[in-house]
Image (cartoon, rainbow, N blue to C red; front, side, top):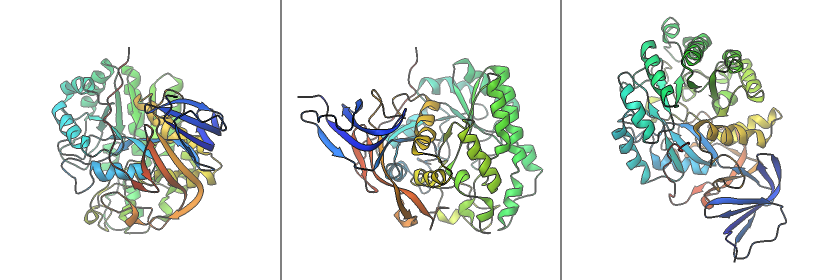
Length: 447
């Protein structure tokens, strides 16, 4: 008898070397071989032929606000991970806010882990938070297994997760650099935003003017300077201003250890199409103009942007009032990221190999999850099975998010997720998640 328990065969398997017809053999939750499509079936193995459906590595979404515990009316580990599984996401990393308590101490991390453990449909890692006064907590959180630390440079929207002033940012980054950690930053300059017109009323143009590109560009320039000075590793969250791409690229050429992400909504939605009063489109930084979106795609193609992740930041429907100044800022897209990005990518001449690099391999590499992110021997058997040429129209009622508020409502997207597999077990079938089998992940130890 062979040790192989499962073989998935497809005419289009997206491997690190590109797509090809192949059979993928799985034993004990890991990929043990990626062989020829017509390789003999191992004795005793279950074989599934996926036909022309594409076998992708399971997506890794490193930017998810689960809000659990404390704001579970907004989301929760159960519905969030069901949505992830339905959308081809097999690993997510939970942000340290907007839960109560925020993940800024080890006891708070343990509270969150206890809640997540009960209802995880996918594997879950955790970010820690860097806030004023918690520099002594950063190393203990690192030792407890968080994948890095998030900081804001301006108010986060919730009082229990305040921003870092410049001297506090320096203190936190020096501490994190001392143990080789990663700081991820919501990079908008508070002074430039304070000096911009206030975002009041229903007009999207007024909201856009309140979060100028210059605020992102200035904050990123300052982060680069500090990372260079301290020889620290930093990551720019949810990049929306393409003007900052030359700054990031230039810093990398100088040896500054900086990476950046963008999000599906910045790649697929434009300011010109946002109706006034449609605060389901509100996020910070904001969705910008079509020309800026074109430049973000160029940055992706050039490798200047490392990954595409959701920034899934849901809330209850009552918080999405028609005034952009008062509405909660956040877009729910955890279940829709893959088809949304694929719909735009295919139109621009990109391939599913590109999408897998942006949405699986890149995010896994960012947080050091070297068992995730690719279909190759030794990795976890995490897969998304996609029908790339089939379309569907987004029905909010069909989403597994706790609150079915989405900027994608009514849009027709390419790419139907047929099934999702976690360590060789099917966790979603035609959009319906199975029982929770996810695990809690810690930062991999390094020699």
